[in-house]
Every structure is written in structure tokens, then in C-alpha cells.
View 1 (cartoon, helix red, strand yellow):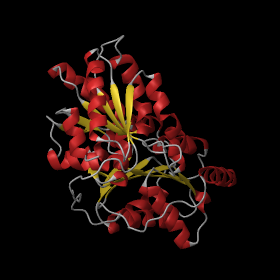
View 2 (tube, one colour; view 1 turned 90 degrees about the vertical axis):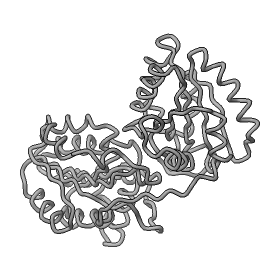
View 3 (tube, rainbow, N blue to C red; view 1 turned 135 degrees about the vertical axis):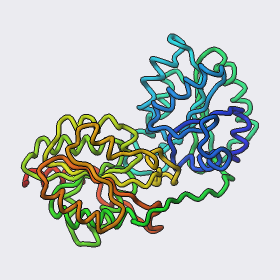
View 4 (cartoon, rainbow, N blue to C red; view 1 turned 180 degrees about the vertical axis):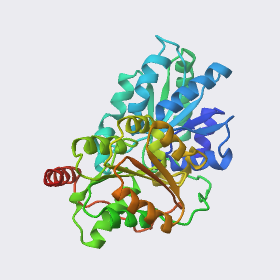
Length: 373
């Protein structure tokens, strides 16, 4: 289905969401049509955030907004859907567009398998009427369903379109770039050179994939690393849990700007606990690059100031490998919580692979290594 036709059928003039590779056609269409425009299109920090933002839009205008997300974001919307939007509370109508990762029968990564199995069930449990759009779905079928949805929305209930892989087409070509020069893979290579045999917890997406390949290239064991292949935004909290209970070992967290924004409250918890053995490396390219490159607000946020305000004893931003190496070495020897924000270019190798070990193997190897250290 042509993505422009879908938006014409829906007929909304305000979209907010969190980008997803399965919805890249929609994201590129919105960026090509509106860019980032507070009146029409806002990329939010997490899915609950955009649901609340959309609710505010409805309160201000009386119109029905659209919230887009990967199905992994369903967990983040359960609270506002149940306690804000529900017709037993404020009866705020909303249309969700959800990318169906891990659809049963369609090969996908391990973090998407169970989420894919329960995607429709969660919508049913939340009493959200839904319709699945696939490659063979016709415009007429979507128009008929949207007519049904309008009656549901008029009663203060919500509705959702669930998008199968490859279902949306004909998006404009949008280029995402910034002015920074350091690549994320090379940044992570510098981190591993300094961290040595210290445990690393890495964030979801391409960062963990690059870390895995760096270990392969170097002939190093993967036991040093916990690859957070799902659960976006929680790597630093995982690292905190490890650091608090392995106080005699330096622990590193390789994080991303989109992930940090998604659950920024974790920085306050880190700052309050001040684990002396944790180094938080925040790679900031101002983009949701793993799912297509759409921008995050981190490009204009002062994340080192946020870290300091949250209680990090030390926080610094670097924009060159010379600065990075100096700060990594200092953090390795510093006996206090440190944040190193690294400004990064957008882009990755076209032939970047995926971990060849299973998630269970990764967990077990990492836990065995932590016993040693």
C-alpha cells in the first residue's frame, strides 16, 4: 500500500511517535512532508510520551491524533491507554500505527519473537480495535475499516493499524546526516581498547552489533559483553545493577542518545547511587539510526549538563578521537561515576552483521565471566 494513500485515508493532521524500521516508509513520508513541525509532526522520547502528547493535542483541538511506534512500544503505552485514554476515564480517541516486528511465521531477531506473538493480544486486552495491513491489503479494505474506526473513535475509544513487513511503499527518499566525523563503530573500538577485560553492557541496535563484530575481528571472547538486544533505554540501569553488585570491577555502559532519551529517569537513579566503578559512554548522533536515521531531540540537548544535574560527579562531551582517548583513559582510572558523551556521525557499514550467538548464550557467558571477576 502506498504510504501517502494510508495517510489520506486516515485524514489526520498531527502525528507523533517513535521511529521503527518496519514503518520507515511512514517516517520518511512524514519527514518529507512536515519535517519536525510542532503543529504536525513530533518525534517523542518514548511511546508513552507520544501518547500523552497526542492526548494534549486532542484536548486542545478536539481532533483525532495518530501515534506511530514499533510493537515493542506497546508496553510503554499500556499505562496512558488504561488510565488516561480509556473511555472509563477521559475517553480520548487516538489512532495507533504499529510496526509488527516478530510476526509469527516471519523470521526476526530474538528480542522481537515474543513481542510479535502478543502484539494483537495486547491490543485486544487494551480494548483497542485493530486491523492488520499487509502487502496484499487493498486501499478499499483500509477505507472500509477506517469508516468503522471513525464510529469507534467518535465514542471515545482508540483504534490501531498493525503494519506487516513491507506493507507500506512509495516513501520519498530522505537523507539523514549531521556534521560530526567519528563513526560509532570506531568509537566503540576505542572503548574496547581501553576497557580491556572489563565487562561492558551495550545498548540495543547497531551499537551491540558493532561491539560483537569488533570482538570477532580482534579474536576476543564475547563473555565480556552483555548485548542488550531489546529493552531500549534500559542498558544503563542494567549496568548500574551489575556495578552495584560487582563494586571491585570497572563496569562500562555503551549507550545511545535515543535510548537515553527514552528512559532519562535512569540517569537520575545513576546519579543518586553514584557507583564509583561505572563509566557511562553516551554515543550521540542525534538520530534513531538503527531504525532509519530519523532525528532525536538529543542533537540540541545538553546531556552532560543533564548528567551533572542528576548527580554524576563527572561528565564531559568530546568530539575527536584525541579527546575520547584521553577521557577514556582518565575514566578507567577514576574512582567515581563518569559520563563521556561522544558526538558521532550518522551511518554504519552496509555489511554490518548480527550476533551469531543466542541471547541465552550471551547471558550465560556474561554471568560466568562476572563470577570470575
